[in-house]
Image 1 (cartoon, helix red, strand yellow):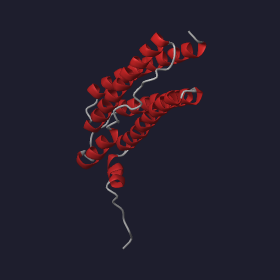
Image 2 (spheres, rainbow, N blue to C red):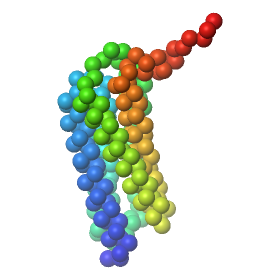
Image 3 (cartoon, helix red, strand yellow):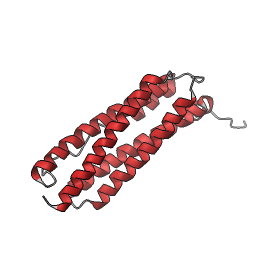
Image 4 (spheres, one colour):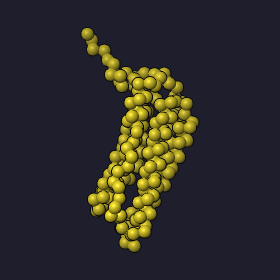
Amino acid sequence: MAKKAEDRIKALEVALKNESTERDFYLQHAARTKNEFGKKMFMSIANDEAEHYDRIKALHKKLKEKGKWPERLALTVKGTKIKSVLAKLSKIAEKTAKVDNNDLEAVKIAINFEKKGEKFYSDLQKKAADPKEKTFFGMLAEMEREHRLSLENTREYFKDPTGWFRVKERLHVDGG
């Protein structure tokens, strides 16, 4: 097997481990938190990570069998539902929802996970020669970016729910 294929297989093995670890983390915190907003956010990302894992596992298997990037590979994954979770919750969540320090710490850790994932997949995208490989890793990097941005939004909600709602509801004083 060519060195390049071996390197990709190893990279995919790292990705599989990361996706599995992250999914477990999100499931654990979805079960632990009492905050409905946090629960839905963690579950949504856990589901996304499970799909990433399945897609990467299938790709890993094909790459090991053939020793090269597969000719046929679906270049899409099911879109993340994080934006719709945020939109729905911004309308119904309590402005004074209870958040504990564990929620804030979990979001901080999750943001770091997603930053690392985004960089990891971006780096793989830059190294890729095959256009389908570039597209696949670019897509995963973008999904990790969406997760990070949503988690940063969640962190702001956890820190100051009232202020967060003011921004989401676009309430402001116009001086008039």
